[in-house]
Length: 235
Image 1 (cartoon, rainbow, N blue to C red):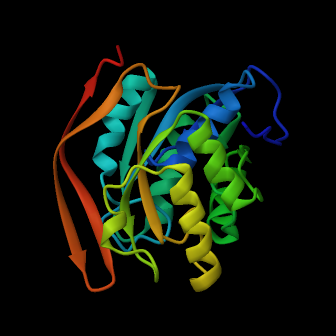
Image 2 (cartoon, rainbow, N blue to C red):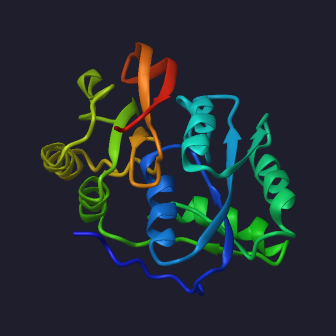
Image 3 (tube, rainbow, N blue to C red):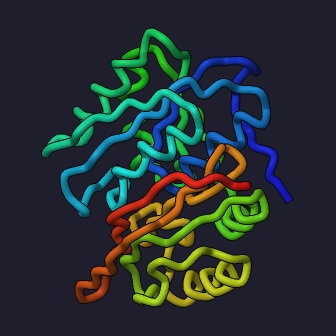
């Protein structure tokens, strides 16, 4: 089943999307484009640390390939100590060309408010099509919509090294629901509990193929670092 998203947008409206290459930001774009909205730009912040409060960290450099296979304009901004200033700069770059900014946030009021505060200063509204959706249902809809989602980072009780590099299936969603019940983990990983990368989806003209990688595990968290990747035909 594919969810019907709720947002106060009008069709054919031009938007920019905050894009990390993970499942949530990509699915937010997909859900809006299915309803006729135009996502003109992908906005990516490169955080300086894996401890970023606002932005996706592992494999963020691969958003370049994902933007290429989506045939979209891609704008990148480096973040140093002041991450919100980097967010402000990148939004300012598109503020005259779009009417709103898309975010894949679904439950973090902390992130949502930060984005809204910046966009308000440019007369832009924030479109959050995944906001408030049931986490388990959202993950199932992503997989059932043809998304190939790989886990690239874990940092929570119950999420062990075995999850790194795993391509999520519906059975894995059942396991994540049990882990969430047992440990209180946010299933979609909005607090950094789990990071992902989309290898393929209906938006991609080619799929992303991992050519070389490294698994890094430190105490109770780890990353699946993609060292080399390329775009490959789906045919």
